[in-house]
Figure 1 (cartoon, rainbow, N blue to C red):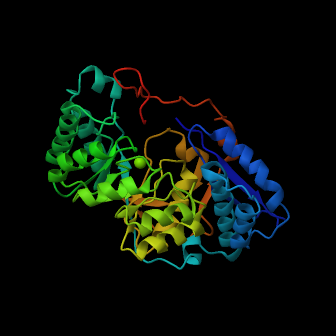
Figure 2: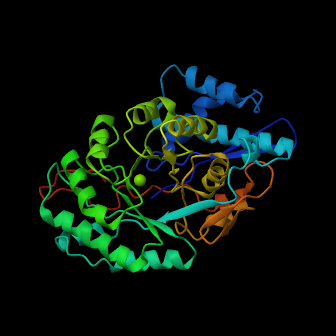
Length: 378
Ligand SMILES: [Mg+2]
């Protein structure tokens, strides 16, 4: 589904370099191209002038670059923090203000099951697949999970789709009890009317939050959902920079923002976004289904950000995940613990990475079409 894109930023000090990540699903070549475009702006510059380099890449581009360019900027920016931390012998979180907590709560995404089977069974699919996955994750120490249980929909729905979501949620809640938080990710699949109805049927089972109930393009529609439900709303994984988050925050479209540190502009931009959200009592739950460099970056942000809530953690994408990246991160019972390795605390094994070259991603692994063949949100 995704290729990892890592950035290695070298300096003129022997052995001093930094790593960052800017993986972006189905846009791998575009991001790699954007990195090439930014290189002339930063080669020869002082990598510890992080804000200056961000300004240079963002403002001197003239064209605001959107998620592809901002992902490239994010990867370069993270690599600068890694260099700065290594040069000072300090972990990055200490340079971001220091730890405001002792550990970082994580959750993992259980996915959406087999949507083709869901359609073919006319929404009578068995919830056991989600229950089994949740119990595997809980056995590893996690006390929070996320699921995709609201099917892609047209602008209005048949009752069967709502009953499907309700049945999945009920089975999960019964299986995991009240001690485990359940988040419902909607992938921006729904219209306003559908989103409100899904929130209504899910509400009795107390989801921790409902994520992207409507597409991200129109914040006013998200505000309508938020005002029509008692369920906490989360959004923001597809937004970049403080400018795109500004609307969401000022209009109070959600309760939890979800910047992706590999897309939004990097660690420092994410801190600014989080601070804006803090003034409206919003929590921060960074989006992260990406590679292991992204994991380390998120840890430093989470440790140092007061309104951080919970961190998405990728567990099971590829078995060679931690061969490619060596690290000193410690994960224990569903939490990451701080560690004082300098910089981001990771090292990419370039030989191991070279064994896994670019492969064309599988585009849209799930069939997402309406009954009449029209394309729906994935
Ligand atoms: Mg999501």
